[in-house]
Length: 402
Ligand code: AMP
Image (cartoon, protein in one colour):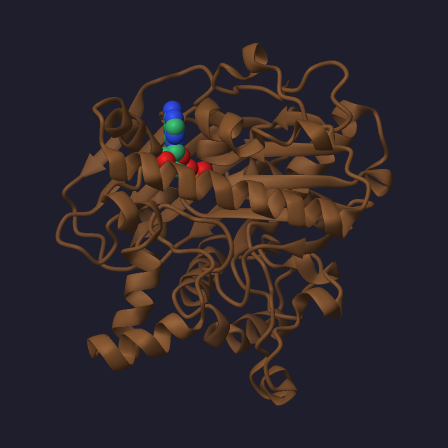
């Protein structure tokens, strides 16, 4: 039983093939620079055991259709032997960014589901069309194989009205569906359930703050296994300080920039999404470069790290208040798993609240779930690698089996 997981973005397609007998990854790859002059495809077969990559460089990959075809050609290459027959694939799981209020769970894709994903395009104009392209090509290439949509927003559909409403005229919620949706749901749900297992508690009894720090960053308050609040909002811009995204700003910044700097709405959108965050503060958006710059005495890089980790800390406080009882805090994703300095600065000073980091345990890159707090810390701190592909594969398998 094999599941193919597809994450189709605006100019790239990530794919992973898993054997669900033992959840082993059989192949993992990326089609990049779709629509650009020189496309690029990378694929690693048995990535846990083999470092070698098959790379195809230079061919123009005109669109998602040709990108997916090239990926499937690689996967069905008899020399690699990972898909001997397309019927070996029992389901294809698609990451879909925005399910709006329509989807609370992963779902088998039907014509009605496609129509609902289309309906939500205004809420995710860059992501949902690319996801739709990926689904259409997969339906063509794997006719008859069940296709499953796993939504980034679905886990957060349990957030109560008092936490998802913005205090703006109610009609804007009714007419335009403006509200907090939240993202990274698959990742938050995955690490929350891993954490429950690690702590030997049923997920239904676990209160945890999950902190996803990668290119995009978000924090979720999980109460009794369900999301009750999250930092990303209507779009993936609100909340924590990210690589190039501002996170929270005074909403009046938009009007200020328009009036005083003559900026258009499009320019302000680009500024806040692509030129802000760590990059805006210090010119760098990769944490590794930021630490190098700090070591070389760069004051702006130091400031950026302070702004980012202070924001993280502030939201932990907010979510402790929202949850009442907190059993654990979990760090995950590129920065959360690899950056011991960000983790340590995020929880520094929270000892009076029962959050006490074990500095020795924290001093490593997290490759497997690791307890990062001292034995008598009232609230445990965990580093848990996220695995959205595995989560999507599990959901797809469960749905396919009915
Ligand atoms: P993700 O979106 O989860 O793939 O995370 C990507 C981000 O993780 C990069 O932009 C880096 O800022 C960060 N990252 C990756 N590796 C490291 C590392 N070894 N140390 C610090 N940050 C890292």
